Image 1 (cartoon, helix red, strand yellow):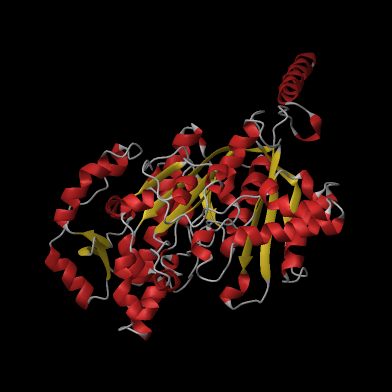
Image 2 (image 1 turned 45 degrees about the vertical axis):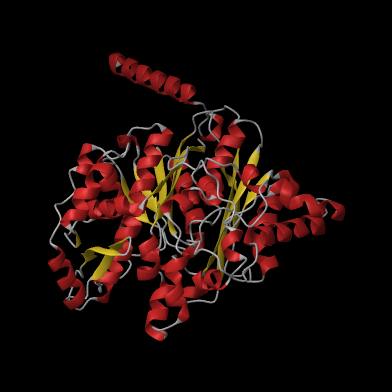
Length: 511
């Protein structure tokens, strides 16, 4: 029995105030150089919600603009805003900050997040009108508190302030007096990750058309880790988000692997379904406040808006083979092993060339590759170059080296087998998975026959190893054959069971 991609969702949340308050570039600057010109100038470079919605890569992320349509517009894109951008897309939405603060409050299970009563009164109705927020979610909204209480907790109790449009509207308090793992800062990060994951899961259910109680397992693959001083990363974001999203029949767990975690999680989900352990598994990840404004200094220095002004989230539903949706081919898996090495060529060889060679395929037999799909509008001004393009050049060069194509074809490889990046720099969010939604559509429409999703990660960031990491897998067209392992169809199995029961009954009669 194969595993298939049943549905996908992609969400963004515009959080302009969190850029300054919670992005590590800005919080570090406030400690190291509190009077810096950057901190004085940054507010002038924060985009409005309308500009965020009208930004082409954001519209691509939620499915309203295809990769091909995005590539047809000359870079840079930040100065070419469209006028008809929409909040909702076929994959998800771009939520404004005020409604997201309400969602964070809804996700707070320990009464740690408080919002000012006037803010709640102004925002409640808009949140309640959200098409995916059912009565059970809206009922979780708590009445607000006085601004005096908010100021007291921020100024005297080490609480994390919550701002909207520059106005103090709430706080997140610490969950323990001395446990740094339960500090207000960490609780805030974790509530953000949980809330964005909840939003992605709600869209996943709606987009895939499944009932909430059909989802049996959830895997969270975000970059945060929740726990306390006795188990710092114990988890479990997956069940915490599933609870708010109403997935009452689901269990779940967290998978961590830096930027490569989504690819690991997808392989795990497909394996769980193929084994028969679970019929429907959702892979999800929320956003990361630390990455907000990460390259802001370079953007401001070049007179640009701070483009890292959104939190990202996604969810993918993997189910048993339905004979229609694209299959996750677990026979072709790329893996960066302990002995692979960390050179770019070694990494790409292990993730792309080696698994294809084992399957008897050429690099050119894969129609589309989705490696690190970072938006080059963000990375190029910061000196990091065009990350997807660099990956395609390396994959193309390997194809030439292996004799899979002629050197003359190298110049057109990226256009034919690749795409421009459109994902926000949220670490795990760009890592291969942004294309799964489009890949599903393109395969079903017959535009392509397959795609390779490539996730890569930097394990050395944890200071436990200098190793790199990566996993890849193939999504391919479904041949319409829903078969069990060993080539036995579901109908044949039913007939076999019926015959066995009949024979058993006959044996009892004869005795």
